[in-house]
Every structure is written in C-alpha cells, then in structure tokens.
Image (tube, rainbow, N blue to C red; front, side, top):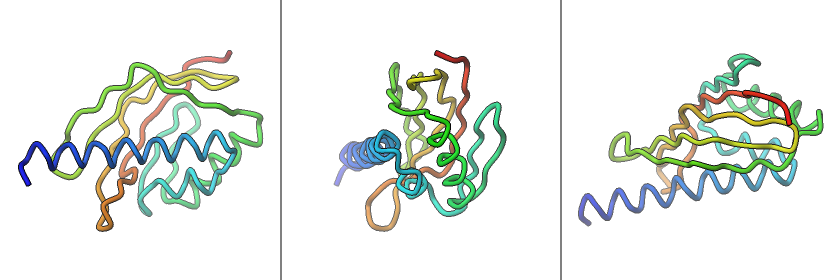
Length: 128
C-alpha cells in the first residue's frame, strides 16, 4: 500500500468517526458520543471547562442534551494530516440553540482500523 492509499484510508476512517459522533448527538445519545473518544481523551469545551475520559465526557454531553441542545451540523470542515495515523479536523458548527467552532479535533486510528477522538477543543461562540 502506498503512503497516499494509507492516508486516504486513514481519512475515510476519521470521517466515519465524526459521522458516528454526529449521528449519536443528533439521536440524543450521550453514551454514543462518548464512545467516539479514546479512553483518556482530554476535551476542552469552552467556556464550560475541561473534561477527561469517557465518563466525564459522557456526563458533559448528557447535560447539553438535557438542556435541549440538539441537531449539530458542521460547515467549513477542513482535515489536515497530523501523522500516519491521525487527522485534525477544524470546522464551524451550529446546533438548534448555539453555534461555535471546532479548533482542534484529533481523530486517531485504533488497532481495529476505526478512528476515535484523541483530543477535542471546541468553543461555543453564541446563542441562536
């Protein structure tokens, strides 16, 4: 396999990961959202704080869902190769009640070929 083919497969897995996260959120499934993170991932959710590990991350997303936030949509999505096994996503996002930016989502390939979030840094920039 060439490096180009390997990077293409890595990017496809990363795109599948964000699609799975988005589907879980839009289905109001906080556990499904948290399952898209590596176990020890640190998530910076500005201005709310920093959350480490799936349990804290799931609790955060459940709280957001419980407050009535739903339907996330990403625009201006950019993917940049970080190394052979990960890509970084940056984007703008909107929800029914808020909008903001993804500053740095690192999606990393796992042993099974899937991609999970290894780092997450996003910001709520306003209400809708």
